[in-house]
Length: 163
Image 1 (cartoon, rainbow, N blue to C red):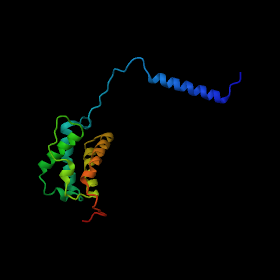
Image 2: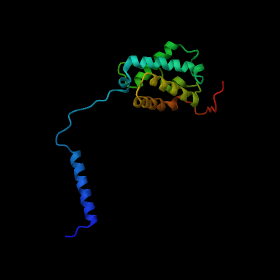
Image 3: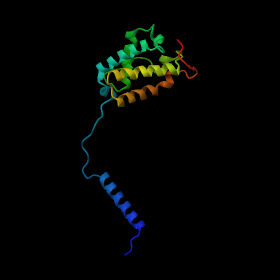
Image 4: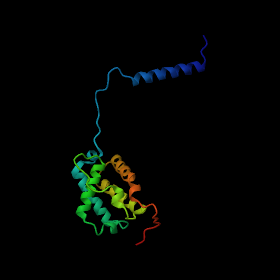
């Protein structure tokens, strides 16, 4: 009986597909359900997020690109709202954001791409200062990036930072 290379390849593929399908369908159902904790919980919860928000504020106050935007603000009010939205956006169930949506809150502020990026950098730096893992920082970045279009005035172009 003569077996060709093509038949061997076909038989091997058939065997591999059968093994794969067998391993995918298990007779005993998996009863271990893994529920992933929210980003808020993985970051560290209320106290950790409050500490991060404090450092976000401090970073903004030192950042030459955005510090003037916050100079006349009430720090307690801003920190409270930033905590609420940070917590709510990361999945906190014990915190309610009571502020405006991002589009309404930033309407008429003419925030440039450079300013938005500076704020993002400040937030991520605060997270890093508090040893938030890279995966969670990436998720925070994705959340921030998701509201970019509601915050940035795309008609403003900033080439360089001028002192």
